[in-house]
Amino acid sequence: MSITPELYDFIVKVVEDKVKEVKVSREEYDRLVRAVRELAAAQRATERRLEALAEAQRRTEERLELLAVAQSRTEERLKALAEAQKLTEQRLEKLAERLGELAAAQSRTERRLEQLAEAQRRTEERLERLAKVVEGLVAAVDELRRSVGALAETVGYGLEDVARVVVPGWLHRHLGVEVESLRREFVEVDGEEVELDLFGEGTMRGERVLVLGEVKSRIYEDDVNRFYNRKFARVSRLFPKYRKVGVLFGYLVHPRASRRARELGLYVIASYER
Image 1 (tube, helix red, strand yellow):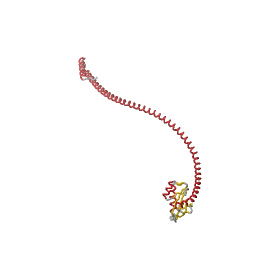
Image 2: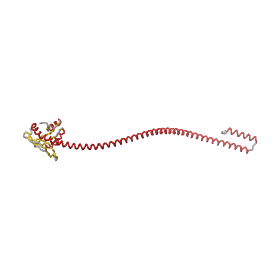
Image 3: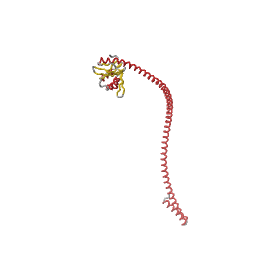
Image 4: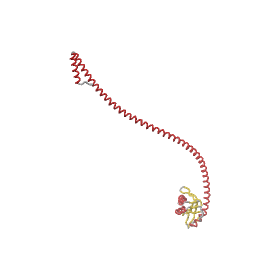
């Protein structure tokens, strides 16, 4: 509680009256006045300290408010962290479940791989057995090919013999070509030996003629093209003074082979033709 100026004057007056009443001495009065003044100074100092304390209290309250706000934010962050922790735990639980599923799937995959490895082993064993069988078949096919080749050669030579008898008569009746005999001949063209199944010289109405022929059991369009390009055309260049007659003779003649032969100026003769 502070002392107002009015209260201070009143106290001084009361003290003065009392001093007069008790007839105190001047010294005592002075001491009393000093005591009152010291009391007033102490009161003012107390008021200043109270004001300082009030200011300190205000600052303390402000700091407490700041601390309260910080505490509130801290609690919110803790709450958020708790929620995040909860979500993390849930995700970890799901991850654990997923890992369990993956482990089970891996186990199934390993079992499947073992089964596949076993199947692969059995397949390899079967392939080894099959390879041996194939080797046997290849050997058998090679032997069969050699046998067929020998047979074809035998048949070919037999067909060539037939051609050497049939073709001269056919040429005479259909083209007027006179040829005494046909033979197998090897002619070198550009350093390469070309084999002709039928080769013979003759005449046609006084003109010298050279017969060049191929004998095959079956004659197709490709055979006609091959004979013309690889044999007839190349050998013909070596005999410019002769009129060349190209002949293909066989058991079977495909219609396309006949058409292609006519286009190239060749003659195709079936074994049954006369």
